[in-house]
Amino acid sequence: MRKNYVLDANVLLHDPHAIFKFEDNDLIIPIYAIEEIDQFKREGSERGRNARTIARLLDGLRSPSNQLSVGVPLERGGTLRIAIPQRRPNALVGLDSKSQDLAILQVAIDVRDKDKDKPTIFVTMDTNLRIRADALGVTSETYESEAAPDPENELSVLEVEVPGSDVDLFFQHGFVAAPHRTVLHPNVGVLLRDEASAAHTALGRFDASKGQVVALRTPRDGVMGVRPRNKEQAYALDLLLDDEIRLVTLIGKAGTGKTLLALAAGLRRTVEDGVYSRLLVSRPVMPLGRDLGFLPGDVDEKLNPWMQPIYDNLEFLFSSGAARGKGTEARGFVQLLESGVVQVEPLTYIRGRSLPHQYLIVDEAQNLTPHEVKTIITRAGEGTKIILTGDPHQIDNPYVDHASNGLSVVADRFKQEAIAGHVVLAKGERSELAELAANLL
Image 1: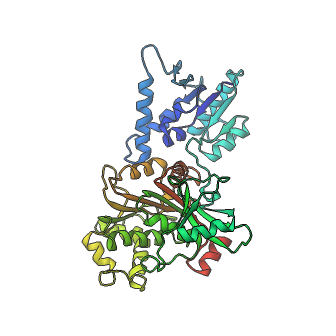
Image 2: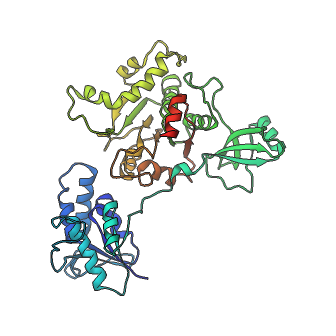
Image 3: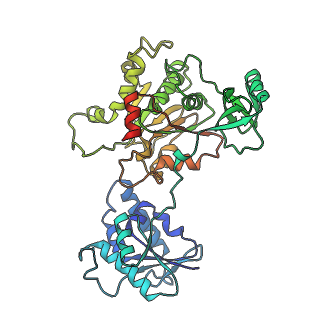
């Protein structure tokens, strides 16, 4: 059945192309939503870019024969119009009379009352406004076009029961044919378990091009002195060290080793093996709690508090005796930073850059929007490998959630691609206290 969808301003600020994603239904944008969007058009942020984009898209739909006030046809069979209520509402229960939310919600009520032949649905990403709409008898939904399944609900290492002979063959040859009765994504971790003996197991990775489960190539002595402590970490190191895998997403709660494993593998492939010209580590500038405001000093001094977690991990790899590789003992991470082989910087100025032959780690990627992650990944030049790490349940960005953040969306969209791998690190290894805190709190 054809429906009326009334869109709130936050939907268009989140995704300007949302107007093309409602199939053959009729879209109504309140004029007050346009007023609200207009306030952000001068911002240099993504919200400002989206405000300018939706303005251009709506302007492009106008023509002498198509007026937005009457309704213009859309490619997929629906229509779009900008609605102005007959009167500016004075008051609705639970809403201030001067509120733009009140005016936008009044449009949804007017559409519902005027067109009773079609269901009217109010679409907003404002949770409180959905509650208010429901209380006033207006059907309301959130916008979920870019929402992805919770990546933590998918196991990165699948357990498959096979005959004991298959496990023996795997240890002899380093590979075995993939089980026919199991559907496997490219590069998924596979734990082969003997049907007769549960303790007889082998850990590998599914190679889609060969149709085989192949052995992990994680060094026995670890990487930069860091050894995997569970099967997920072993699988993660294998993906991080494989140059054929160009995009790796590491998801897990605090203390699971996401950043440490990524840095150790990046140092190994950049400093020791020389495969990449530079290790570039970055993270979004997003405060936890109340912001401290302006910081004194030059760029490096201003960024130091934001990048300190990365410096902590680098210092651990070098100064704690963990790094015992070729030449890394004598060259501390400070020397590597000064030489430019290792570079730590924010994501603020990445737009427009081209990054060839680099090992790029983006920490705390759960605070990025899908558009921002797209901007980062499209910077990758020839021979560049990108690692995204984060915890979708520790988000400081108020405009994304565990399903709509860039990290979750990338993990979902790339799971069928042969050049991408995804790992969910479940067990915390930082300390017993950190693991208890992550579980109990």
